[in-house]
Amino acid sequence: MKRWWLALLCAVIALPSWADNSAAEKRMLDIAAELRCLVCQNESIAASRADLAVDLRQQIREQIQAGNSDAGIRSYMVDRYGDFILYRTPLKPTTLLLWFGPMLLLAFGFMVLMVTLRRRKRNLIEAALSDDERKRAQALLEQTTDTGTSP
Image (cartoon, rainbow, N blue to C red; front, side):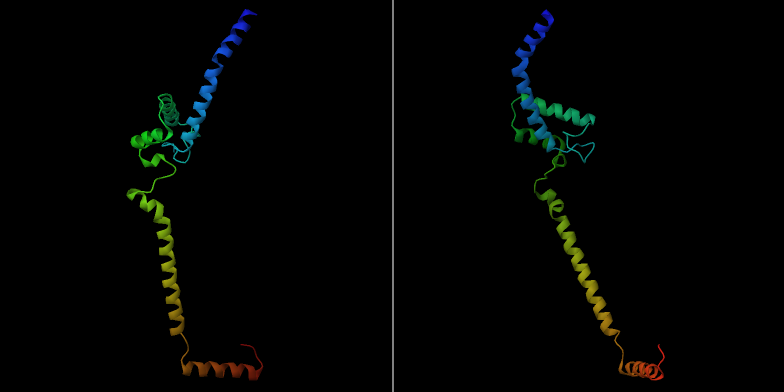
C-alpha cells in the first residue's frame, strides 16, 4: 500500500513537468512537420522513423529547451542541411527554376503545340487538289452515280 501512495505522490509531483513536456513535444512536432527527412525525402521529420529523423527531432527538442524560437530552429536546420530540408522552399536566385520551371515548361509545350498545328494546317493547304485533279475526281464520282454502283 505504501508503494501505491509513493507512486501517486511521484506522479502528482511530476505532473507539471509532463504538461510542460507535452507543450514542448507539440511544438517540436509542429516544427518537424515542416522539415523534410533527408533519408526518406518524401516524409517529414515528424513522420519518419529513420535514425537521422530521430536524431533531428532530438536536436529540435534541445533547441527548444535552449529557448530558441521556431524561426531560429528552422534557420539552424537550414544552415546545417541546406534549403532542401524545408518543404516550403524560399524564393531566392538558387530556387528560381524550382518555382518557375513548371510554368516555363508549360509555356514551351504550348509553343511547340502551336508550331506543330500551324505546320499541319500549312501542309493541308498545300495538299489541296489541283484543277485537273478535281476534274478527274468529279468525273469518277459522276461515273459511279450514273451506273448506280457504289465506289
